[in-house]
Length: 197
Image (cartoon, rainbow, N blue to C red; front, side, top):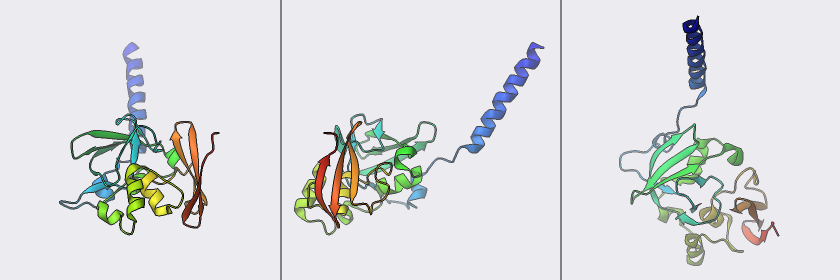
Protein backbone atom coordinates (compact mmCIF):
# COMPACT_ATOMS: atom_id res chain seq x y z
CA UNK A 1 0.00 0.00 0.00
CA UNK A 2 2.84 2.38 0.89
CA UNK A 3 4.54 1.64 -2.44
CA UNK A 4 1.25 2.33 -4.27
CA UNK A 5 0.87 5.73 -2.54
CA UNK A 6 4.49 6.61 -3.34
CA UNK A 7 3.91 5.63 -6.95
CA UNK A 8 0.77 7.77 -7.17
CA UNK A 9 2.54 10.78 -5.64
CA UNK A 10 5.49 10.34 -8.01
CA UNK A 11 3.16 10.06 -11.01
CA UNK A 12 1.26 13.19 -9.93
CA UNK A 13 4.47 15.19 -9.49
CA UNK A 14 5.77 13.98 -12.86
CA UNK A 15 2.48 14.91 -14.54
CA UNK A 16 2.50 18.41 -13.06
CA UNK A 17 6.17 18.89 -14.05
CA UNK A 18 5.44 17.73 -17.60
CA UNK A 19 2.41 20.02 -17.80
CA UNK A 20 4.41 23.00 -16.54
CA UNK A 21 7.27 22.21 -18.89
CA UNK A 22 4.81 22.25 -21.79
CA UNK A 23 3.52 25.67 -20.66
CA UNK A 24 6.94 27.24 -20.25
CA UNK A 25 7.96 29.46 -23.13
CA UNK A 26 11.26 28.74 -24.83
CA UNK A 27 14.15 30.87 -23.55
CA UNK A 28 14.77 34.04 -25.53
CA UNK A 29 17.97 33.70 -27.56
CA UNK A 30 19.56 37.07 -28.34
CA UNK A 31 21.32 35.84 -31.47
CA UNK A 32 17.89 34.88 -32.84
CA UNK A 33 16.22 38.12 -31.72
CA UNK A 34 18.81 40.18 -33.60
CA UNK A 35 19.59 37.64 -36.36
CA UNK A 36 23.27 37.91 -35.46
CA UNK A 37 25.76 36.77 -38.05
CA UNK A 38 29.40 35.85 -37.64
CA UNK A 39 31.29 38.84 -36.22
CA UNK A 40 28.14 40.86 -35.40
CA UNK A 41 28.20 42.67 -32.05
CA UNK A 42 25.54 43.79 -29.58
CA UNK A 43 25.63 47.08 -27.69
CA UNK A 44 23.62 48.68 -24.92
CA UNK A 45 21.03 51.03 -26.42
CA UNK A 46 20.97 53.36 -23.38
CA UNK A 47 22.65 53.78 -19.99
CA UNK A 48 21.67 50.90 -17.67
CA UNK A 49 21.83 51.77 -13.95
CA UNK A 50 22.57 49.29 -11.18
CA UNK A 51 23.64 48.96 -7.57
CA UNK A 52 24.08 45.17 -7.82
CA UNK A 53 25.31 43.93 -11.23
CA UNK A 54 23.58 40.58 -10.62
CA UNK A 55 20.19 42.15 -9.84
CA UNK A 56 19.61 45.08 -12.21
CA UNK A 57 16.02 46.33 -12.19
CA UNK A 58 14.29 46.48 -15.57
CA UNK A 59 12.87 49.81 -14.30
CA UNK A 60 16.38 51.23 -14.82
CA UNK A 61 16.29 52.88 -11.38
CA UNK A 62 18.84 55.69 -11.54
CA UNK A 63 20.96 54.76 -8.54
CA UNK A 64 24.51 53.54 -8.22
CA UNK A 65 26.56 53.40 -11.38
CA UNK A 66 25.62 52.56 -14.93
CA UNK A 67 26.71 50.52 -17.92
CA UNK A 68 27.26 53.25 -20.51
CA UNK A 69 25.26 53.47 -23.70
CA UNK A 70 27.13 51.81 -26.56
CA UNK A 71 28.90 49.26 -24.35
CA UNK A 72 29.64 46.12 -26.34
CA UNK A 73 28.09 43.11 -24.65
CA UNK A 74 27.98 39.34 -25.09
CA UNK A 75 24.68 37.62 -24.27
CA UNK A 76 24.93 34.71 -21.84
CA UNK A 77 21.28 33.67 -21.79
CA UNK A 78 17.83 34.17 -20.36
CA UNK A 79 16.04 32.29 -17.60
CA UNK A 80 12.25 32.10 -17.48
CA UNK A 81 12.09 30.91 -13.86
CA UNK A 82 14.27 33.64 -12.37
CA UNK A 83 13.28 36.22 -15.03
CA UNK A 84 16.92 37.12 -15.61
CA UNK A 85 18.64 38.37 -18.77
CA UNK A 86 22.34 37.61 -18.40
CA UNK A 87 25.22 39.17 -20.34
CA UNK A 88 28.86 40.20 -19.94
CA UNK A 89 30.94 43.15 -21.13
CA UNK A 90 34.23 42.91 -23.04
CA UNK A 91 36.19 42.83 -19.77
CA UNK A 92 34.25 39.72 -18.73
CA UNK A 93 32.15 41.36 -15.99
CA UNK A 94 28.78 39.62 -15.80
CA UNK A 95 25.41 41.32 -15.34
CA UNK A 96 21.83 40.14 -14.87
CA UNK A 97 18.73 42.24 -15.52
CA UNK A 98 15.71 41.18 -13.47
CA UNK A 99 12.93 41.45 -16.02
CA UNK A 100 9.36 42.08 -14.84
CA UNK A 101 6.64 42.09 -17.48
CA UNK A 102 4.21 43.70 -15.01
CA UNK A 103 6.29 46.89 -15.03
CA UNK A 104 7.33 46.78 -18.66
CA UNK A 105 4.01 45.41 -20.02
CA UNK A 106 5.82 43.74 -22.89
CA UNK A 107 7.48 40.40 -23.60
CA UNK A 108 11.05 39.66 -22.57
CA UNK A 109 11.91 39.45 -26.27
CA UNK A 110 10.61 42.98 -26.92
CA UNK A 111 12.39 44.29 -23.83
CA UNK A 112 15.67 42.82 -25.13
CA UNK A 113 15.04 44.43 -28.53
CA UNK A 114 14.81 47.92 -27.06
CA UNK A 115 17.60 47.45 -24.51
CA UNK A 116 20.29 46.18 -26.88
CA UNK A 117 21.12 46.93 -30.50
CA UNK A 118 23.42 45.90 -33.31
CA UNK A 119 23.96 49.57 -34.19
CA UNK A 120 27.43 50.84 -33.36
CA UNK A 121 27.58 53.77 -30.89
CA UNK A 122 28.53 56.25 -33.60
CA UNK A 123 25.32 55.34 -35.45
CA UNK A 124 23.25 55.77 -32.27
CA UNK A 125 24.73 59.24 -31.79
CA UNK A 126 24.14 60.51 -35.34
CA UNK A 127 22.66 64.00 -35.29
CA UNK A 128 23.27 64.53 -31.55
CA UNK A 129 24.97 67.83 -30.70
CA UNK A 130 28.22 67.56 -28.65
CA UNK A 131 26.74 69.23 -25.55
CA UNK A 132 23.77 66.84 -25.49
CA UNK A 133 26.05 63.87 -26.20
CA UNK A 134 28.20 64.80 -23.21
CA UNK A 135 25.09 64.83 -20.99
CA UNK A 136 23.89 61.50 -22.38
CA UNK A 137 27.28 59.92 -21.63
CA UNK A 138 27.00 61.23 -18.04
CA UNK A 139 23.48 59.84 -17.71
CA UNK A 140 21.89 63.29 -17.42
CA UNK A 141 18.66 64.72 -18.79
CA UNK A 142 17.95 68.46 -18.68
CA UNK A 143 15.30 70.75 -20.16
CA UNK A 144 15.91 71.35 -23.86
CA UNK A 145 16.87 67.76 -24.65
CA UNK A 146 14.90 65.89 -27.32
CA UNK A 147 12.96 62.67 -26.87
CA UNK A 148 15.67 60.78 -28.77
CA UNK A 149 18.32 62.17 -26.42
CA UNK A 150 16.24 61.21 -23.37
CA UNK A 151 15.86 57.66 -24.71
CA UNK A 152 19.63 57.38 -25.16
CA UNK A 153 20.32 58.69 -21.65
CA UNK A 154 17.53 57.01 -19.63
CA UNK A 155 16.04 54.39 -21.94
CA UNK A 156 12.31 54.07 -22.50
CA UNK A 157 10.15 54.85 -19.45
CA UNK A 158 8.42 51.81 -17.90
CA UNK A 159 5.06 51.27 -19.57
CA UNK A 160 3.37 50.72 -16.19
CA UNK A 161 3.70 54.50 -15.62
CA UNK A 162 4.09 55.74 -19.22
CA UNK A 163 2.08 53.46 -21.48
CA UNK A 164 2.60 55.53 -24.65
CA UNK A 165 5.68 57.48 -25.77
CA UNK A 166 3.30 59.90 -27.51
CA UNK A 167 2.32 61.16 -24.03
CA UNK A 168 3.57 64.61 -23.09
CA UNK A 169 4.72 63.22 -19.74
CA UNK A 170 7.25 60.42 -19.18
CA UNK A 171 7.85 59.00 -15.69
CA UNK A 172 11.14 57.44 -14.52
CA UNK A 173 12.22 55.89 -11.20
CA UNK A 174 15.14 57.57 -9.43
CA UNK A 175 14.88 55.31 -6.36
CA UNK A 176 12.75 52.19 -5.80
CA UNK A 177 10.01 54.44 -4.35
CA UNK A 178 10.60 57.84 -6.00
CA UNK A 179 9.92 59.00 -9.52
CA UNK A 180 10.50 62.05 -11.69
CA UNK A 181 8.22 63.39 -14.39
CA UNK A 182 9.61 64.72 -17.66
CA UNK A 183 7.19 67.11 -19.35
CA UNK A 184 7.57 67.61 -23.09
CA UNK A 185 6.34 70.31 -25.40
CA UNK A 186 6.49 68.74 -28.80
CA UNK A 187 9.77 66.83 -28.98
CA UNK A 188 11.57 68.83 -26.29
CA UNK A 189 11.84 68.44 -22.51
CA UNK A 190 10.34 71.61 -20.99
CA UNK A 191 10.32 70.70 -17.32
CA UNK A 192 11.53 67.97 -14.95
CA UNK A 193 9.52 67.52 -11.77
CA UNK A 194 10.30 65.52 -8.65
CA UNK A 195 6.76 64.30 -7.98
CA UNK A 196 7.60 62.89 -4.55
CA UNK A 197 7.95 66.25 -2.75
